[in-house]
Length: 276
Picture 1 (spheres, one colour):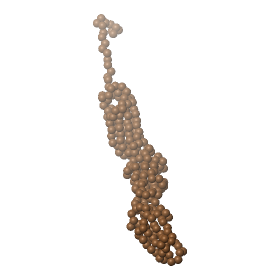
Picture 2 (cartoon, rainbow, N blue to C red):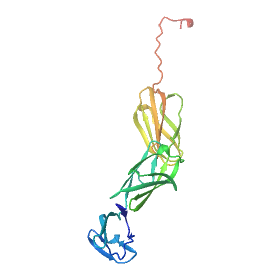
Picture 3 (tube, helix red, strand yellow):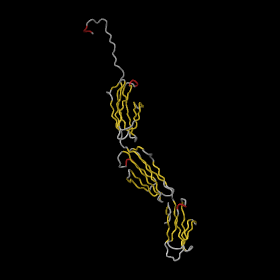
Picture 4 (tube, one colour):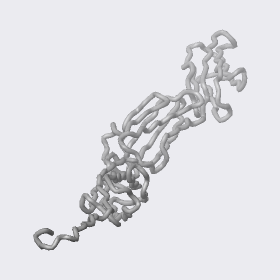
């Protein structure tokens, strides 16, 4: 057929009932071959040709009948680009963008997740929303197969973690009114892997810690003498590896001022105990 794509050698056959035919084959007026008896065939050796568009000229009995067929040699594989790196953590708001490019024309892209076909697309760019995937949170592999019109193919595989759940925080403190040096006890957990914790006092950074694993128990000391007496807001923010986050807020009263006793002055003339 006209504009056929090829990445390897191929035979071209001519069927004719013309007796004693002499069939001339040529490519761009070169690589001439003459066949005097059936089968009238010609081998297009793709290894001798660079990628590009060529004209196959088939002539019977020296211009009595002429056929002109264009074909395209393409021996280059497509390229694939994926917006995430290997072992990336992804949450429900993330998107994977898959792009493929070919020097001539892309035929299709197959997307496989954990060995199962997810979709087949003829588009050069595919967007996959993590929230649309019907897979459990955990470790997964993504395989991309891109094929062009000449049947050149490339396979790209990466691994990723899907985590759509937020971490959990449980806070223990002393009573509502606090003074002196206090300890805030934290019990932090995640379904997969914790990453980072930030503590704010009245909106200002007080402490931060890197976390790892599914569980973390922390005891954070606070010297309340550095704070004014009154209400103060303690904010704990925790992230996991997929950047899911949760925050917890407690409000406590700081009182480091001791009570006072006013001086009492008694008149010198008081003599009876009942008059005190």
